[in-house]
Image (cartoon, rainbow, N blue to C red; front, side, top):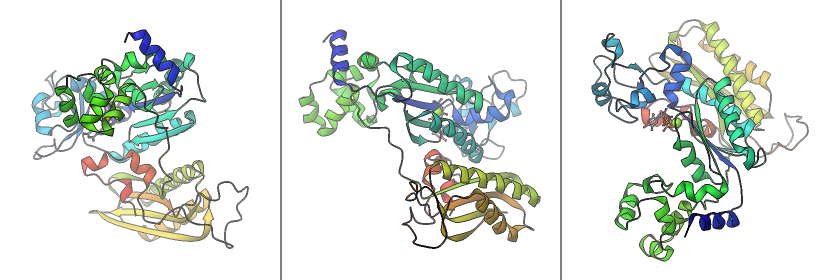
Length: 415
Ligand code: TTP
Ligand code: MG
């Protein structure tokens, strides 16, 4: 088949959704740079275990400058230090880099700011991880101007949040993801519907969505090295080797991924928390922080059309004692003032404590009232609940999937 034939084949069969994939560049490192601008342009490693006396730990991410030295995610920190010594220990060494510990609370807050923008810009949004999401933007733009739209998304994130993103635009999710990865960092790659087959053809088989290392080896044994080879492979042969999965992978390699960009299910609760540097004795600061968190949580609930029947706080005191308190309301509400008053009341008993961390959460969410014009609230028939109190905060958990790798406390633990 010639490229022209591919083209015709693609454009005649594909429905032309416009899918945009956003993946933030060296995300944790970019967050550190946002609050410490001197780190811009420097080799920077974010990870655990590099401090004197510590030997165990891993790299969470490395800036692109640090990647030049061979430092990469999930590497043992000792291997990273071999490749890139610590500037703090070796200030005159021009080949040294900066190391910072993982501060997942801060990255979560930055990620939330990015998400706010994405929800404004997409018809639907599927959050995948702390720094990655798909948007269906079919109704928001057109293929002729899709590049400008992609640039707009990047610029809004960069101007309003201060961190860089790479964006890919394509007619399906799996091509959009490959496109965002294609020209990182600060990339913008638009794959028009008629270009999909040409774009995918040279992609290494291991990078095709759904192909793991084992399957990649098996495919290579059949002389299938690229997505183009896979797209052209005999479907019957693939089916004989790999069953239905073989056909599915061939479809992906042809850009025939018709998965819709679906939001994750409704969350069971919504929470925000933040840490103090060490532990604070300043309870006014704790109150103030809780008020801000409560406002953010109430705002998020209201954007998701979620009513809540339980308002809670979490307070972590040294060494690492987690206290949670919650108050249930007689009926579901969407009421930021109530979140404020209840959470402040629940904090009273901790007024004399040192506080490491404070959080606010709304739970027992209810989405069934979303079409009602007014909410009389308390009393009367109780609508069915959206979920059980105590479940993990699904919305936040999506963006904190990576916490687990670091063994950090995640928002999902806030119960
Ligand atoms: P990625 O998007 O995979 O990586 P990245 O954003 O750092 O770099 P890129 O520009 O290539 O997208 O992951 C997002 C964040 O997740 C990353 O900043 C740190 C965290 N993470 C880990 O903690 N451990 C890991 O092994 C990986 C891959 C990521
Ligand atoms: Mg990323």
